[in-house]
Image (cartoon, rainbow over the protein chains, first blue to last red):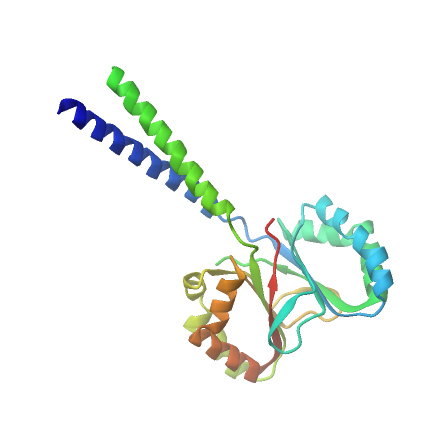
Length: 132
Length: 130
């Protein structure tokens, strides 16, 4: 009987430990990052597909990575809710507005922007992230 | 003394198990999905206020629908071209969650008011599971 009780106690301890461990990791995952900043590239039409595909696309990622940016959207698959969706849509997340601006003003990015300007109808802007 | 040691080991083992389980649950995520709301012009600013002040547009309501605001701004800075007057980016864990947001009756209602009081477009895009 005594052994039985000890086993139950041990089992309960293991369970309690599991719950604590689960809560700890869940807490880590829930820790939201600072709101940061985003760059949005909104392409309504690709007017020169060859230039865009061969000159722009192969160069687009390194400058983003260099400033700690992350592509969170980079797609030509959009589902309209209302109105006309873009042909291609890109959102890049940065840790801060400073990083986003440093990316935008870098020579490598300026070159990409120039290729985009001549091969697409598009616009780009930066926006602060929001705190929920 | 020995019992204490066993209890401590059991607790530590449990902690590890729990941590691994939850970590696994989080890792199994589908690609995140985003809703983009791009407002060129508020044609009826007073009418549009019904959208921004609606409980359906509150972060709490969005949380209840498993979404969160990434951007909700009227101060976008142009890099080139004309920036939107107002721009909203919502993030969801999956396409299904984004669709459920769009299908909710209170969301449909504010989207309908937005369409009437602004020049705007809205769309759903799949993101990267970075």
